[in-house]
Length: 163
Image (cartoon, rainbow, N blue to C red; front, side, top):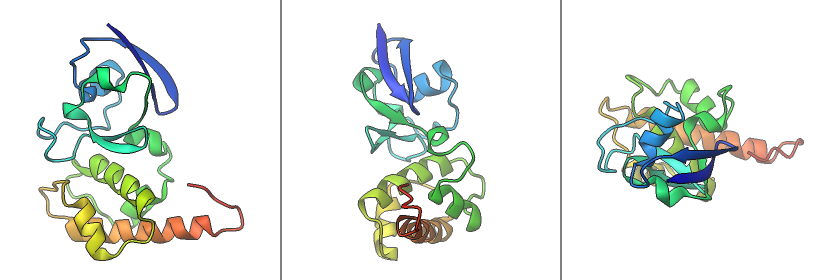
C-alpha cells in the first residue's frame, strides 16, 4: 500500500505494509537513521519524532497513521547543528553514549515550543519519560534551560529570528 507524507520538508511515498512502525520506515526505507530503536514499546523515547509538530514515539506508530502528515526527525532540525537545542546539547556536553540523544532532543524541542521559559522542575517533568541509561539527566536539564535562553534571545534579536 502506497502511503504519502512529508519528512523533513520533502514529500515521500512509501509502499510498505500499513502496520509497519514509522521508525522502521524512517530507518530502513528512507535511510534516516538518526531516529533510534530503544525498546519497541514506546517507553524509552529514543525513537521520538515530531508528527505535525507533536512528539510521537515512532516505534509504535503505524506508518498508515502519518498519511498526509508532516514528520520531522532529528535530521530535519538542522543538518548543520545550528538549532538552539542542538547548540545547547553541544555546549553542555550532554551525551555520554549518545544513543538516546536524538529522542531527547526531539522531546526538548517540542517541550520548549509549548513552554519557552521553563523552570528546572518543569524540564525534569517534561523529560522524565525519556530514558537515559548513562544518567546524564543533570546535563540534559542544563541543556534544555540553556536552549530556552538561546531561543529567547533569538526571538528578541533585531533579526526577528523565528526558530
